[in-house]
Image (cartoon, rainbow, N blue to C red; front, side, top):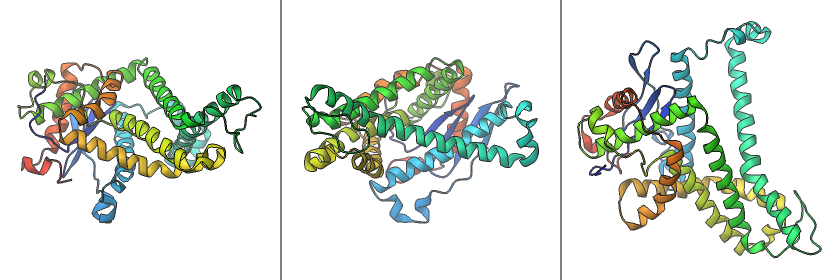
Length: 333
């Protein structure tokens, strides 16, 4: 049950035993501490578009907002881990490098982990789909040889290269999400994700943020990070297919095609962001069709929350609500 009447720009993120909410003026994280209390903390944050207005223009703002959300979300996630005492690992602090460099060692580990994560993402979503397509193309095309980084022979499947690679990306993403859902800690985080969506739906319906009202709402929200990622993957299929049709040479020069895909990321993210904004502001046949794949995947990334989780989400949302509700509506961000 969710009768949306007020399309708000407020969004959030599930944390470890908590929820972060980002409102028009404030960003606040609320967490349930080991003693059962709910603590709230404001996270200082100034959007870069406030200093460089051009970064707030349509399409351009998509990749900018995504980077900002990742950075802010990572900060909040680390803070929620601190509140749970997860970072107080005596084994780590007892190592030679930690005693020598202190917190700088942990910062360096974080940087290395981030670099490795980006590298793994590039391999899985940029290189692997192309390599698999070249392999399949070489198997069905007589006389064609398999290449990974150079020239690939034109074959029978070239017309479907963009579609094939896009489907592989979607499969990789769904497998990753399904695998994480098997972990008990991640399942609890997905419950907080559901609480975040339900609380925002409750506010958009104009209802008081009580546990009873929030519990009745849907946990599937069209304006969600999961939906955004799915839209990026689907948009990439359309953009890639169009480019391969316009520039057939990209079908045969593997390294150039991978470089082009990386360069296209800001554009694809921008188009996906504009679509997710559209779905958050309007409810019609087109936006429901666009939002449908993301809502389906949210069956994996959200779970029905417990009442104590709903209380945490309500606390975070309440803390970021502006005095004037109009300030939270789309078009004012």
